[in-house]
Image 1 (cartoon, rainbow over the protein chains, first blue to last red):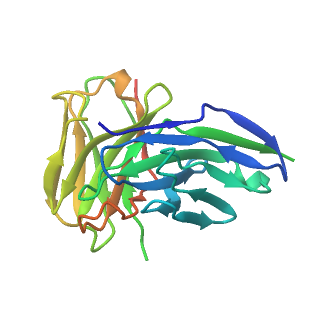
Image 2 (cartoon, each protein chain N blue to C red):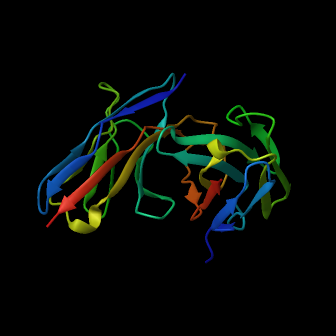
Length: 112
Length: 116
């Protein structure tokens, strides 16, 4: 079955540091890949997505590239802000199926 | 536009009582998902519907849990009887369904349930 493995947290960084959160996946076909973010006290919201190999998703300074050869979708941001403090979830879905398989989430804290 | 609406936002009840959580999906979305989130187990999919029909309920913990979607604009998740281990945040999410698997799920704000 499908699975998503993401970097264990929590992660604490200083403001303006470079961020990488690793995500690898196992899937039988050609899944779509997503990063969702959850701010304190809120539901999850889509941060970015990529639907085929070599696609790059980007939003709010975050980027992730769909790497089929390494089955990875690592999240990066060049300069983090305190407002980026949240929990980040990597997820995938199969074609023909709207069900998402989520990773365990990575809690990110940015200190001024 | 209104997003996914959940009620109540907070619920505190005593063990053995019946609890009903409600969800109104975004208009035009025909897939609806119920999730549970806890520190210990993370985010779990309980059940999802396409066009009001339950498609996968393999995540429903046990017979105490039931979910219905009587129409396209309303769904309920019921726990009867409730137990302290059911304490969690319950999220409802909706998405358009086109069979591609590429669509974003839109999450509601969640219902925080505490069973004493």
